[in-house]
Amino acid sequence: MSYDSNNIMVILSSPSGAGKTTITKKIQQKYQSFKISVSHTTRKPRPNEVDGVDYHFVSHEKFKKYINDGKFYEYAKIFDNYYGTSKESVDESIKKSDIIFDIDWQGTQQLSKFKNLKLIKIYLIPPNKEELKERLTKRNQDSPDEVERRYKAYDKDIQHWKDYDYIIINQNLENCYKQIENIISINKNKLSIFSQTTQ
Image (tube, rainbow, N blue to C red; front, top):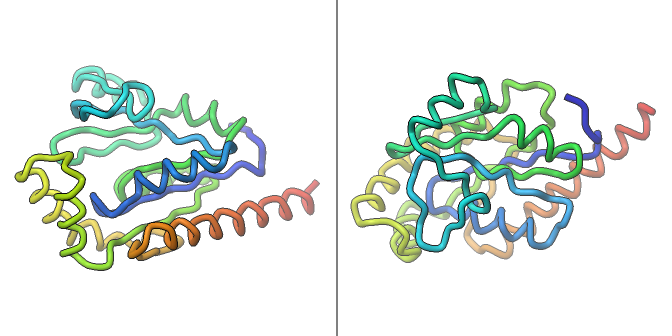
C-alpha cells in the first residue's frame, strides 16, 4: 500500500466511558485533514446513531463472512458484539486524509502488527474508577447492567496502557484535547521533516 508519507494514523483508545469518542469527533470537526475510521459492528444502533456515519451496522453472519474473507485490519469481540476496521476503507482514506481510529486495546494490538501503518497510539484514562462510573451513568446510553459490565471491564482494560505511545488522564476535556492536538502536531512535523530529508 502506498500513500502520502505525510498522512498519519492516530489511535485513540480508552476504557469505555473515558471520552475517546467525544474527542475523536472534536478532532474531525476542527481538522478537515482528519477522517474518522468508521468501524463495522454487530451491535444495535443507539437512538442518535446513523449507519455509515457512526458505524456500519451489520449482522453477525455478515461480520463473520468479512472475517473469513480477510476484510479487516483488526476486529474484536467486546461485550457480546463484534467491531472491526475495514482494510479497503483505510487503504482508500489514507491516500487523501489523516485517519483517526476510535478502537480498543485489542484492535490496537492487531493494527500494530502491520508495520507499514504509521500509527500514533494514544490511551485516555479517567482520573479514577468512580469518575468513570459516573460518566457511564450520566451519558444515559446503556442499561444499568451494561453500565456495570463496562465499569467492571476497567481493571482489565487499564492493564494495556503499555501498548501505547502516549497516556493522557482525561480530567478536563479541553485540556485533554489540547494535549492530543500537540501530539498530532509534533508527529506531523516529524513526518514532514523526514519526508523532506529522504526525497
